[in-house]
Length: 276
Length: 343
Ligand SMILES: Cc1ncc(COP(=O)(O)O)c(C=O)c1O
Image 1 (cartoon, rainbow over the protein chains, first blue to last red):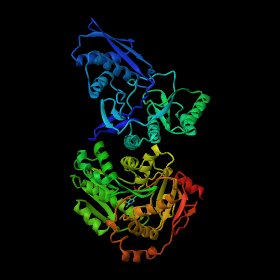
Image 2: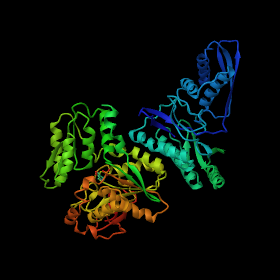
Image 3: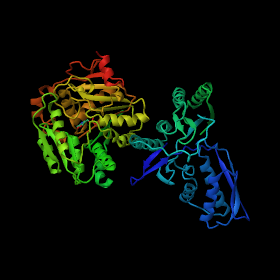
Image 4: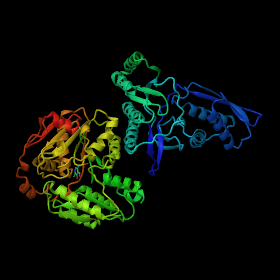
């Protein structure tokens, strides 16, 4: 879910709830050297380099040089939060190397500064509604999201999207109000461990997002989802991916996933399946 | 003007959620119109349509006037309410005490009735006020838009909702709440409750006794394409239902709440696997001398105690002459389609 949400004092923020996927990971190692500059390999990861420099300055080691080696299985530019993972892994690698412990808030503060907008990837114990540009938690839900299996469909395999390349969505007044019931239903869904309701919230958010970064063939995917017994669709609001969601605890799960996979195959979608 | 000055009654805006049966919930408001009134005023302040010295004017003989007067009691702005003889003396005294100027129209317009006469008077007042704001609850899209927070409370407390039942006056509450809930539950059934002789869903226009629902003109805030099913009730059925709702559930609510409850109970009993929510717009105090007064009822609606209606008759032509509880499968059609298809 992604939209605009009020904090407890009616202050309005852009916010999101990220869907975690434990199969996709990023590792970083910081190897200090005698230079005064930080390098990153691969060298294209500019946001991670910025995060490394900011972290070193924060712990008063701004003259420390070194190289951060990043290895990741997260696809780039698909809206899966690859750069947030790079940034977080980099910060943590430096903190580990110098045996410094930071609170989550301190880490997120540097991450947002390095990245401008980042996912709530760090918060894995409980689901949070996170202000991706303010770096603050608007609401921590009671528990983690219920277990959900995903068939990840790439709607535009040839395109990549950078979160910062397109204008943040300008929601109309109806949409601004609509995020209130979405947030409330998600709160209830988490509280009750109800995967089906999570699916409804994700689908509603996906539909609202069509006005801003339309996923081609979303209607077709909705039909396949409904016909196969999926609980909903989640989208990368700043990416090209659509996730078909399945209740991990449902007795019909395997049948549903098989049915959906067959239909996707037939409709020539490219997809990957991730178990919860 | 800060949020604090318009939102201090926020605790009164939200409905209480009352479980009435295994699959039936009431959303019982203290005074539902506080919510759209506050939202409309707040948006107008934000857009600069209301500033210091802006004269706020509205035509209403009921709850919307009261809500406006309650919220503007702490503002410096003048508030004028244009109304007619139907404004009860108690309500008029409250409006005046809240600082509103109340204008009573006595002469009906030769063609447009009292509704038109009130509008004409309102337009005269607007023309005399260089800086004015007219909330226009019947066609201001901020009225339905105000109901996002009601949808939020309902899903937080109830979860999945399969059917929403409410009376239709301006259309703001039912259509607003339904449009938000449908984002989450696209298959949710929406049932509009109207009264016989109201043009909103195609009945021929004629005098009506129950206020709050129905009308002689079609407000643009009624989005007919959201409605799955329409029910019409007679005044006698509505007043009987009001007293039964009170005596059987303890809920002391206005007649429109009871009208919605009557239809919803029937639907919920026939769809016991579906969760049904009823919008109940106001409490019963305002009707102590009418719907809750036997003498008043006996004189106005002698049959109120004896009407016997436990199920609706189904019709396809909304223009039919009706005397009792009737239902039509609207099917999310535009009003013009329903009228054309029934000719
Ligand atoms: C008592 C009462 N019930 C129901 C309604 C209908 O609500 P809406 O105008 O949102 O359709 C009104 C509207 O004024 C009302 O005053």
